[in-house]
Image (cartoon, rainbow, N blue to C red):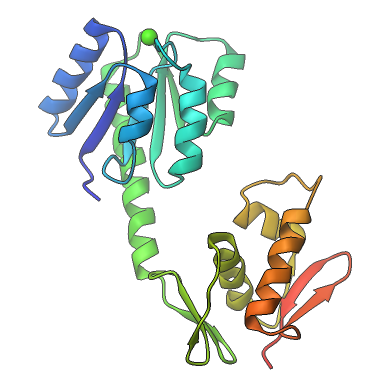
Length: 226
Ligand code: CA
């Protein structure tokens, strides 16, 4: 992941041009797009940080932000908008933005915040790479390559099943609450329906063997170490 690569999404010519000039003078490589749809298409690990305007000609920036966050949980999103009401800012942060700066903004402040977010993305990146495989009994989970094995047998898991097994194996022998699973795997504290979790537990049991995973009624699950 190139750390200096920024995506600027801004339809205002003067602001866009000014941003690009300043950011490039600071050594960043900048790609400037003027609407939401091309930004959604371009976003990804090549751009660790997106500077996002809200009033865009095609899709509202809040919607762009929500979609970006869903498809690219690892990137930083900084909203830069003339909408200065508290409700707008809350909507932006709720849509998954890491930060919100109101126009007109102070340049030094924008640059300082950019540095902070880029640092965080870079650190998260390194943590991901440094993570060691975890084991419990004959189960082995390697989050760097996103592969899991039972003995010599590679397991065929869907992404969330993999994350779930990774969490349970890391905590092998200990209870993991449903609340924690929902927060860490599904990134939600919404407990209204945990049918998805039940489905995933069911198919996970099929892969790792039916009696490896104990249901703790009213609490959660525990992966037993044999
Ligand atoms: Ca605009």
